[in-house]
Structures are given as structure tokens and as C-alpha cells.
Length: 278
Length: 304
Ligand SMILES: Nc1ncnc2c1ncn2[C@@H]1O[C@H](COP(=O)(O)OP(=O)(O)O)[C@@H](O)[C@H]1O
Ligand SMILES: [Mg+2]
Image 1 (cartoon, chains in turn brown, red):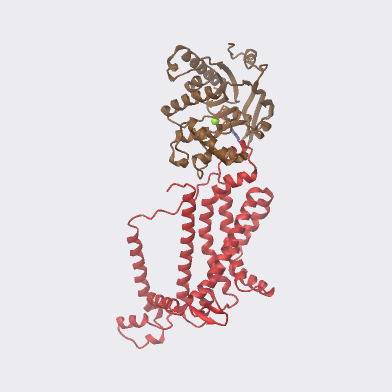
Image 2 (image 1 turned 60 degrees about the vertical axis):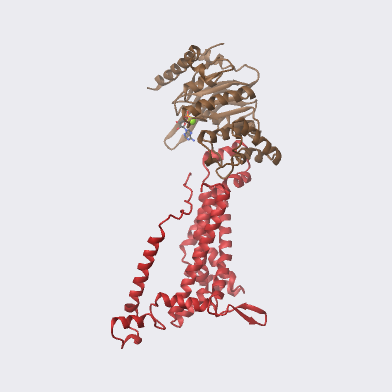
């Protein structure tokens, strides 16, 4: 297990560009937003390789470019320089081929659709048969423990349930890559713990590649196989931490020394990132 | 971008009936009180002495400057319920032109046709503006300018121009209605079609949804509450448009014609009753749109 340091060449090595079966390969990627107040350097010289089946977390203070990086992967934002491939394709090709499911910070359910119809939305867009749409909606709503809520409208569900519905919607067309932008950020801690456990179980069952944005250290350590620590102005990766806590994690693992040690390292990374600016 | 959706019809609060009744009573009292000073100069009042007597006379004049409310209601009753609705002609039964319902129907049909055409036009213009930068730049100024030209100036031109090519009656009036009512629909729908937030739009993008799919699955349903808010405004000004369209030609039929002939012959009570019927018609139209709004929004899962 090679652990990255802040030392650039070594960090590069652990980013594993050579690894076969890479899902995402980002090299020297920068992104600058041109705004009325001048350029915003949202991402600067980002290098990252993600292997199939990994659960990767992006962690960092707000404004460090986590969302932007996720959006570049999803082809919702274009890099200013550098290269990026998703499943060996350009992000645009990957998007056109519907190769990822995206879970936004808010559930972004369409309020005029029932929960079932919301989950069916991508399937409708893809032109799937009605029967298939319904079967899948039922299956994935059950998977996120929302069986029985098919005919409810979004406002009739709690925030946590809505976000679970949005996860079912992202899973409904069975993409191999799941991009999640602080999906539980707006939820209280108890709900969040529960959803974290469910998400982990889901990941263990499906072995999808997950990229997960968070600003919670325990959440990142609990869920991830690797943690990407980012820092702002300009947004960049300052550390990539292996998080080898094994497969069958339960919430109790958060008390173990190994967990605390990794969390400590993430914290140090975040602190180091800050000292660059201040 | 995330403009707040127009608020739905306020739920009727218990206890709002009494304030409404009080206000109505106050208005009525003021109205009756005003009848004497308003009609004071009429010859019928010249020789009447005593306040009570003067008031009694002022509430029962044949051609008052200001008729009393009960006179208007009585006239409205007599010219609707109190008059035969149908008339036998060579072509069979037709609505009786002596009945105010006949005139109301003439105006209502122009209103509804104009409302339908104007709303459709407004929706089409909004779709164009939202989807094409060029259209947005080229069309929007015209949409705005169209509303700065006073309708009273446009109406005679439209009626005369269309009359010269043989179009008379319903269609020219409907066109004036449409000219007035497309505007709030276009403005409301532009706002509504642009109301989906970035996340809802990005979601469609991640599915590689086409513009048409994004329109039908996102923009259109998001715009529906805005559409109804606009339609409520549009339907009343459609009625105004239809009535205005009846004025310049001295039309023989329609509420506008009744207003005109009433003022021509000094039949103030007839004017007021036509006015009252127009107001009732407008209220009816708004209620109909509101009902359609309730049903639609309910089917779209809006919070009760
Ligand atoms: N569309 C945009 N235009 C201009 N600046 C943006 C845009 N999107 C994000 N930014 C800026 O880029 C930086 C990174 O934003 P973001 O990726 O959202 O951060 P995070 O998700 O880590 O909180 C911030 O300074 C933000 O203000
Ligand atoms: Mg963010």
C-alpha cells in the first residue's frame, strides 16, 4: 500500500496512471472560470486515476473545487487545459453514452412527478419500454428502502427519503460509475449515518465505481477506499490517502485506532492545505 | 433564475365572509347616499321638497345620472330572466336580441376565441424566446412595443382594415382580444419555461436528453403554474378586448354595443346593467380558469 505524501513525485506515483482497468484518468487538468470579477482558478494541475470498483471521496473546504472536478468528469463543465478520460472516452462521449449516474447536492426531484415517475425519468428519456421502466423503478426503490412510496409526491417524503429516491434514480439505468456531490450534506447526522451504511452496503453489492464529494472527515473515512484531499485557491489535490479498512464496515469501526489514524491524516492534509493560503 | 412560482389561489379562510359583507354594505350605503347629489340637477327633482322624498325620487328616476343599485339589478333581471331567451325565425330558434344573454354570448364567444388565440400565440412566442437567442433578441422588443400602443387606437384600425377585406363580426373582435391577452401569457411563460433550476436542467443533460425531451419533461410542467397565473389575467383582458372591439363600428350586438347604444340614448341604467353583466362574466371566466388551475395542479401533485 503506497501512501502518498505532500511530496509531488511520490504523490504522482500513487495516483496510479499506469493501472489497467482505469475508469477515470485525469492528467494535469486545470479549470479557470472567467467571471466579471476576473478569473477564478477553480482547479489547478489536478492528476488523478480512479480504478474500477473504487470508492473515492473528494474532501476539502468549500470552494476548493470538489463540485467543479465532479462536474468536469460528468461533462457538465469543460476543463481549460489538461486531459481527462472516462472509461477510455472523453467525458462528452461518456455522457452521451449515459455511462454515469449523478447524484446532486439536493435531491432535484421533479415535484410534479411521483417518486416512481421520478425514478423512471431517465428510463423514459432512454426510450425504455413502460413495463421495464416500472419494473426497474420498483426494484431500485426497494433497494433504497422506499418500497411502498412509489405513488407519493416528493413533498410527502422527508429530506433523507428524497435523497434516497434520487439515488434510486441514478441507479435505475445501472451505470457503472456513480458521481455523488455531497448527497447527504443537508441531512442530520443520524439520518446521514444510516444512509452511509446503506450506501456502503449498496456499493458492496453492486461494486460500482463511486466518486463521492463530502466535507465530513468521518464520512469520507467510513465510506472510501481512497480519499482525495483538496485545498482551495487554486483548487488542487494535496494528498491522496489509502483507506484500507476492509470491506464489511459497520459504524462501530469509527472508534478503532486505524480509523482514527486515517481521519487524523485527512485532518492534517486539510490543515496543510490551509497553510498554503493563510 | 429560481423565480418563486406564483402563489396558488389563497385558501378561503374561515371568517373572511363578514369583512367582505361589511365592505359591500359600506359601498352600497355610499352609493345610495350619492344618488341624490349626483342626480340633483335633473328636472324631476326640481319641485320635490323634503330630504326623504327627494331621495325616494332620486332612486327611481328613469334616466338618472347615477342609478341606484336596485335599479341596475332590476334592469339586469328584466333584460335576462324577464325576457324571452329564444326567438322563432325562418332558420329556427335563435337567441333573442332583446335578451341581454344574447349580447353577453356575442361578446363571450369573441372573448373565448381571442383568449384561445392570444394564449396560444403567447405560448408559442415564449417557446421561441426561450429556445432561440435570435428570437429572444428580435421578438422581445416587438412584444413590448405592441403593448405600448393604446388599444383604443389600434381597435378601429383593426376593425376597419379587416372589414375592408370582408372580415367582420366575431374574428376582428377576437383578434383585438388576442392582441391584448398574448402579452401576459408570453411574459409569464418565458418566466415559467426558464424557472427550472440549474440542477434540474443538469439532470436532463446527464441523461443526454434532447431539447424536446427537456421541454416536455421539465420546462413545460415547470411552467404550468406560471401559465395559469397569466391566464387569469389574460382572460379578463380578453373580455375587455372584445368589448373594445365592439365600440368603433357601432356594432348592433354585444355588451360593447349595449354600452354604446345606452350612452347614445342616455339609457344609464342599460349601461350600468351591461357593465354589471360584463363584470359578472369576467368573474365567471376567472373562476373557470381558477378551477382548471386547481384541478391541474392537484393532478400535478402540488401541496394542497
Ligand atoms: N460557474 C461558475 N462560475 C464562476 N465561478 C465558479 C463557478 N462554479 C464554481 N465557481 C467557483 O469555483 C470555485 C470552486 O467551486 P466548487 O467546485 O463549487 O467548490 P466546492 O464544491 O469544493 O465547494 C469556487 O470559488 C466557486 O466560487
Ligand atoms: Mg460543492
